[in-house]
Length: 146
Length: 494
Image 1 (spheres, one colour):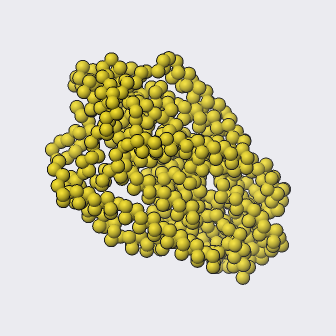
Image 2 (cartoon, chains in turn orange, cyan):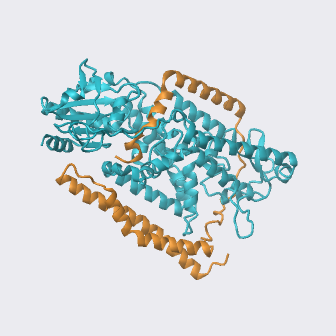
Image 3 (tube, chains in turn orange, red):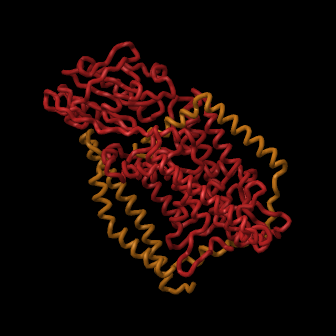
């Protein structure tokens, strides 16, 4: 691949777009939170985030998103790629070939047997049901909803 | 032939590994209806853990996340040991090791696709190698230490990694639900926690664009866990010591921070095979060579009609399994409860029966733990507060004292009931003893009829407030603060 100055510029622009987009989306979220927290302090029943506010803030970021997509399309069409990405890392001298650990078959058999026994014990003591209950209910805290 | 560089004219054919990754991602998330309806799969298959990092609150997920289940199991250690999850993790580890990361993990696929965005890239160095140790700290502190401490010392479910870090949960679970127009009410529960996790998600995504598999290399505790099994795993990349010259080409071309092929950082993707001039590296399952660059063994062998036939049969079976999973999870699974919308019948007071604001709730009766009976029809003239909670739900437990305080402040003016779902992990009556709650508490009946009446979903906690006329003035799935409860009481009293 010929790595011209034009392609290098495009690559830098794309990198800047990605960093900017991340910063803008993060700042928008922090902005919604700051405004919402102030609203909530005055009225405890007010929501911090609303779908409308989120959509409005996202709309403000649309020009940047569109710009990033256009640059991305150009990069893909021109097959722009960081030439360093595929370059091998610096040589650290010769490496010693990895040796297969001793008694590997015995270790495998013991661990498989232990795993099967633990699974059976888990089904008997009800910890499999714990997994099911946790799985079929949305843990709002776990996914970051609140 | 070089799988990674396989091209056909202008069109670059996807590699076998990419096809397997896409297949696994679809199989992990076979409940496609969930993405359309904005709900999660509630079938029995969720008792099984999937091998890769895939949030079980993702609308499409048909299995449970092993990391979330592990934290939950460690939090429950005070009640029962989580043998089941430990057994499953051991089994995945010894059979597949980090082959899961390289071939099956849906979040691994997302990271690789993000890295395809053409930008300047950060190459591996001593810094990245140092950072790769971070995931072991995260495993020890957030996945094992904190859940175990909170479980044993405070009897609180505390999935610290899910709560504070996991970008897979934010991307698949939170954003997966918020993006669906059916879930706009969920915006009401967002606050500081979501803002923090959203920023973490963005930073992780940016890191993945700039640096190959940044999350996998530096943060993922599941990868750290599977990495411990890498040297012993049945399926994995193996090096023929007799052929290896120790030139180090494999390590230099690897995107991960490996020191040797097959060590704990190796995701067994097999890219190194394409760079090994000696054909010393192969992907094996026991003694069977799945992929190899040895012309004598795999290269020639792949052209054999028998080998090609076996490959074709294997692909046919895989396709049949995927089709069956898609049909089963979306249409046939009897454990999927299809909730019909509540029939709207007009009552004498013109307010229709339902659970939306302005509706009247259908009548119900529950026997409380103290032996009393809560009959909704008997509460007219009082402000009614109904709260759905569960022993496994941390926000639910944290807000219980607020309800108790409100009840104690207006004991004669409020009819309150705290309801636990009928599926029980820890006996709620026993669990609540230490809380010394004044308000009546009960467990929902078989099939959770009250959940249906108040329009409950799989999400907890849920709070419903009725005014003195018995009309719903608030019905929300989110945590509430003492100030919100007091405001709701004032509003309902008007």
